[in-house]
Each structure stands twice: as structure tokens, then as C-alpha cells.
Image (cartoon, rainbow, N blue to C red; front, side, top):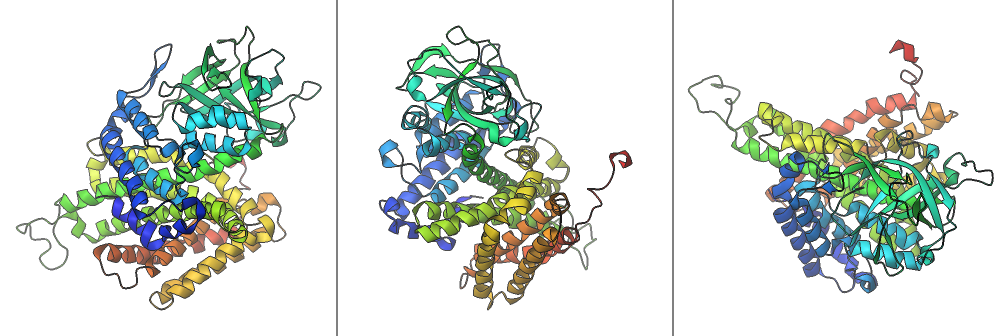
Length: 604
């Protein structure tokens, strides 16, 4: 099956993306230019990514003592992606961009994620450059961001440390002011960094001329001590290779050394590294310490980095979504072609009758509908969030503010729902294949392995849950949650005529979420309120996807095509099989059930 009809429906029939052409920024675009971008990305994904998904899984990156070796297919895919212009697709014409709506950019990148998430595309590089465009100096934008957008340089984000993991307040990488003279001083206040970073995706490779690391580190106070907590964290540009103020390589290697490659369950085609900063392996100007240039103000590193982290979280959600979609298409194709068993009912046990294809069995249809409802619902949510990004950047001041708050509330869901439930879709895809699904003869086992990462990186499931219940639904006196509720109620009103029971179920789910939010916090200490944050996240996510599906279904009025029938069935499935689960999840939230939180470790 092809992804394109689904993308076209969501973009044009549901989100009405052509309406963005009335905005000055997108005035040069049309349905034809949007289609041309999608055509190009679909072709590159089909030719340069999909045929090599298994190859990059089996030929893992390795270090030969001097450099990391990747398959030629990965080099070819990176080159094709960079040449497509997608790294700078949403940027201004003046810096080589297309001024493409982010909604279309996100849809176009979906083709690469489905073809081979393991090869990777430009998520971190674009996110790195986008951060610098907001928080960097003019010269930092010219030297680093512009060369990331054109593909000469690639980018990373360096947050975690071996001893700290997700606890960023405990990072110990140290940045001290550098007194030496450099011709590149104009690139920003210069520091020497010493420390260790772990779980750095694309932290070492030969795909691009240079790698631009964005590194969180702490500047010592006057007594030489590191300031505790996140307020002491600053952000630095640390290039792998030194550059001058024109972006040209100087021939010097910065003191950033590969300490090791992580050998992963999935995403094996992408390097994941431990990096040592300032260990003295590559001393610069005879001094140890990796050279880094301050981004923004001292102590505001985490605030700057969240610009990239939030973008990456939506990107992770899209990757999880497309892996779910890939598994769905693979298992649907298998189910249509695999004969096994006989029909139930009269004569069903007559072995002389021919076998039927497994798609004719009711339970196979259940598993296919579950995958469709999870994956296509998550894709619709991802594109809806992308549409909010465009509204935030080009809408009126009031619309932009509304979109900002909606994105704040929806980002944990856009990351977490597909990470959990499209992983479940991959598990169901394996189940449909039976024993074959557990072998490497079919791709579905790799999809599951690749997808298992997405509940972990860019903020674990538990972190997303605490962010949602502990911050996002409370911020600005709950205004973001109220705005989201208004949109849900508007959809329920719109769908009332054809989808009365579902509209009522959505209103009820929204009421349950609201009550649970109030009861979780009513007179509670944070530890009590957040003890069941993950069940709250699951219930909230299911309510959001139910809303998305109802909105999609309401847009199908008068459309009786097979695709429309499938979407209506997926909507009904989600409301009847999935949405009722929220009651059990929210019961423990409302009661602040202490079963898990209060159990002493000895009892385990």
C-alpha cells in the first residue's frame, strides 16, 4: 500500500492546507508546489531508503580506530536528502529555504520515517539549526546554522551524561572561560568544555564535513563550584572540527573524542555515541578542553535547548507513527495473501473446503483496525500539531497565542501516544504474521525493535506524563487545557448529527479528564498528585485521539469510498474498543491511589 493517499486526504480534505496560501509567507505556493515536494520525498524514500532498511539494521556502524564506518547506502541517502532541500524547507528564501509550511514539511518527512527510520533524515540537524536561528548571534547563524541547512554540516544535541541520564540538573560537564586568542573569537564568548556525554545520536560519522554539537554544561561560580540545579546550565556550540568566521574548516580537530558506540536493539543504522569533551586527545592550540561558543546568556541553556527538545519530541512521535504505519501496511498485505483455516459457522470444520485468507477472520480484522486507528490517528494528530506551528508563526497575534498554548498541551501527547500505541500496533503486526513475524524473513520484527526506542528518548514516557499533569495542564491557570476542551466540544457539536453516540462519549471523556485533573491536585502534594501521572497521560492521549478521529470522521460526510469506509470503521473501533479504557486509568488518578508509590523496595 502507498502512504500517499492518506497524506493527501489529511492535508487537503481534512486540514485544508491550501488555506495557508493566503498568508504572505506562503503566497508563492500552491497545491502543485506542495505535491511536487511530496513527490520528490516519496521518490527519494522509495529509491534511497526503503531498499536498504534491512541492510543498515544488519551492517551496524563500527569504529575502525580512526573513524566510524557506515554503509554506502547511508551516505547516498544522506546526500539525496540534503540535496532535496528538506533540511531548510521551512526557512526563508534568503538563506536557501523554500518557505514551505511546516505542515507540508512534516508530511513530506513522513515518507522517510516509514521507509527507514534507522537510516535517519535531518531531524536533529534541522532542530539544531532552528535553535540557532532563534537563540544564536548573527554570525553563529551564518557559520553554523546556514551550513547545517545546506547539508555541509550536521548537528546533534548533547544533554545526557552517564551518571545523570534524564536528570539534567545533575550534569557535571564544566565550561570555563578561555583566555587564548583565536581568529574565530567573533563566533561568541569562548569556553573550554570538559565532561562526558552519552546517548548522542549521530555523534560521530563521516556523512558531512563537520558535526555541530549543542552541549549543555555548567559554568563554575567565583569559587570554582558548579551551580546546583538547572539554573546553572548554559548552552554551547562545540564543533567537531574548528572553523573560521566564514564557516571554512581550519584543519584543526576540536577536543571531542568518540568514547564508544552503543549497540542498540533497533535504530541500528544510526550511530549512537558516548563522547568525551576535553580529555586531551585532540588538544586545540596546545591546551586541553573542547572549544565551545556560548549560545544565548549564561544560565539559560536549558531554556534555549527546549526549543530543540520540543521539536525533537514531535519528530519522535512522527517516527513512532510511521513505524506503526509500516507495520500496519505489511501485516495488511500479509493478511490478504496468507491462506489459513476455514470460515466459522456451518461447515467451518469441513477440511475438504478450501482455506480462506486470514483477513476473513474476525480477530485479524480486529488487530488490523487497532493498528489503523492507532497509526492513522497519530499521523492526523502529528499533522494537526504541525498546522498549529504554522498558525503560531504566521497567524494573527491572538491565533498565534492560542496555537502556542495548544501546542504546549499537545506536545507530550504527540510524542507519547504513538510511542506507546504504535509500538503496540507493531506488536499486533507481528501477531498477524504468526511465527513468521518473529523471524527476520519479514520486516515487522525490525519495526517493533526500531519503535521500542521511542518511549525512551527525547523524554521518557514518565517524564512526558509528569510534564503533562505537573505543568502543561496547569500553566497559565489551565488556559491551554480550556482551549483544547473548547475545540473538542466544537467537534462534538459538529459531529452530533451523524455521530451522536461518539459525540456524547467524547464529551463524557473530556469531563472525566477534567475531574481527574482537579482531583489529582485537590489539596495534594506534588508527589501524591503525580504518583499516577502515566495513567493520566494514557487517558488524556486516548481522549485526544478520539477527538481527532471524530473530527476526521465528520469531514467524510457524503464520501462513501472504500477509504472513507475504513476511516469510519477506525473511528468506531477507537470509540468502542479503546476510549472506554480511560475510566480505569482515571480512577487511580482521581483517588491518588498510593499502591505503587508507597510500596517499600523490600517488598519487591
